[in-house]
Length: 231
Image (cartoon, rainbow, N blue to C red; front, side, top):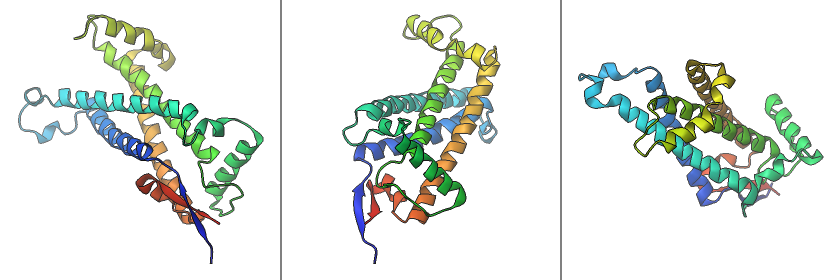
């Protein structure tokens, strides 16, 4: 009979942050689809202008993105200064991390059960995978704010002219990077959303795969904060 050791993998704050991000992702995707193509206005009898449908969708989209970005800043801080676990250590391209990364990757694509490293904590493959996710969120922020400031053509906002100025300074460079026009920025912003959706599907698959193949209860981490390590 194999013995298991209970291992804490996520604090309460980390689990709350995970589910807040998940809810914000749903809100941002649904409202983003509507902003790009108002698909459910046909279900409302009154004109959209009377119901402020677009205004509410833009409001939800904007604030969901803000929560995303605050979460990413907090996680970036914890990458380096967390007292629980510092993921940045797994990003260092040393021999141990590279070997662990490729072992997880090969196991994943070959459906293998071989595990020759300590899986009680975050592995380097998953840390790299999550780092890519937060970089995608940062890119979504920059392109999204460029589209937002494009609507402030007067150079003024409800809180003054300094806000559009900061946005222009911070995000105008995304226009030439994306192709040279505002429409290119919109297209890239939309395309990045699909990349993030693919990332989410793979993330869910990866956690379920670990749970089935390594039988350590990884899927329970985001609910109770614990997993089990084979003794």
